Image 1 (tube, rainbow, N blue to C red):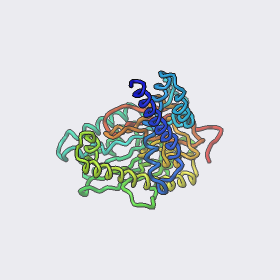
Image 2: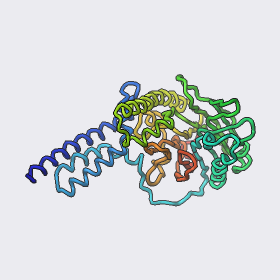
Image 3: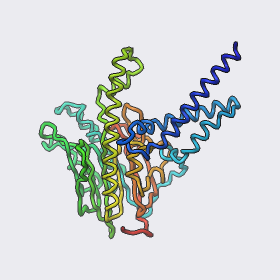
Image 4: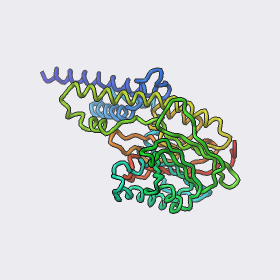
Length: 378
């Protein structure tokens, strides 16, 4: 009887192994298939880190059992081994370069958490002050903020405060999209120690509550084009977050189906909208007359159509110089690397770091870049 039970368990494990190995292989196709055509592949790409872990566990299991089935997951992992670097990077160097580099910082600051406080509550200054203090300590040369906040009433200063206190960053360009109660604005903002000679908004064909901008910055004899990007968000609200956190405790099947459909519908819509934005953004990148740096919150993982399209002909500072797990999302849903600093071949990335500070639902990322003297301007 024991032998039959073991045999049945072995078959179940083998079937499960084949299933997850096939899903892992299928996830590798996510960057190449536009969600507008086959949207569910994007969901499988989203599962890549979990599918990788499951298959690694199967490799360990079969090694312990001395079974030839180890090849099922091992081969599925080897087929897509190049994707591992996009989420985990082995780097033993902690050296910070000092040679002719400039520092770029990208940070989705979640509106300084302003919406969590009442307007007259002085405690709401704490996240702003923490972020400003962090910026001062980092001494960046260029900052790209997403979900930046501006209060035109003057009660909650952000632009003036950052310009005055953050290492003499007197050049900036902001673009806002939300006007809440006639005095609150939010959007994207790029600050620079170097002069900005041109700037503008990147138009998207589909209506969105997100913004992307470009700024042309003069550093010495060189002009750089900085794209500050905030692509379509999933628009998951507090109700969705509560449903997700309490998913296993729900005993009402109708509520589970309704909540699951609602969340999946929002994510599906965001996948599709981001694919359009990615294509339009990439065209702007290709048409740039200057060397390009792309910073921002893509709201998508490296195993996605969005990332592949935007990063075409660009290098990823994390892949070049990152270390450890590249998670940049700090929210209540599963964490991924969705914030990036990319650059074209006119730059050399010499350093990359993610700072694990819990002020926003994103972590700030920092890269040190220098111009590739062999390339020069486009």
